Image 1 (tube, rainbow, N blue to C red):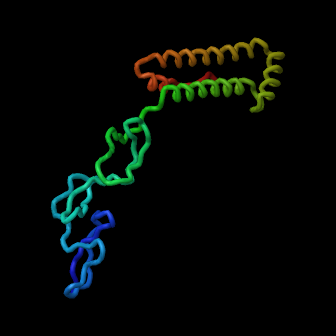
Image 2 (image 1 turned 30 degrees about the vertical axis):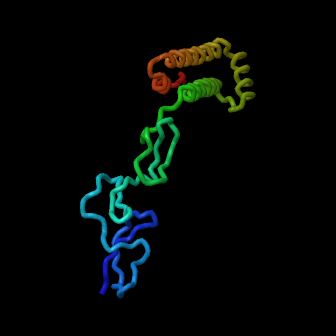
Image 3 (image 1 turned 60 degrees about the horizontal axis):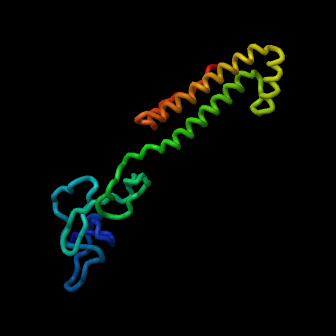
Length: 185
């Protein structure tokens, strides 16, 4: 013959029911085991679990392991029982404007350098290779090289001006992120 006991972890969180052999008179239950389980009523939400508190079952919020951000933008993983911290959000905060601007400036510079290297057909990826090939092109087609460099430089200037203008807008981060860095090929 057996009896059903309701088990909890060391914090009192309900783990489930199990059957154990019936006890003889005076024999206690295993640690963290109770004869009566939690009520049959549904929990308030998916983030709640039953916990044995004192001498009764109660519903507590259990967000342990949930990752998000605090009100100040700090990433945080919940490690304790209870409600979420004040100001909690599941949505990552927008990046800082300085961060976004620095990334876009780097993309503009890299795009320009890559496009310029592409203009110099056959140029190696090194600065020396580009310098040698551009010197050779300048000697054989000075107008063509100057035109292409002017075209790329004009695009770079236009992108840098767009970047400055975007920073002055109401939603500067979104405006900077919306700038598409591209160069004519």
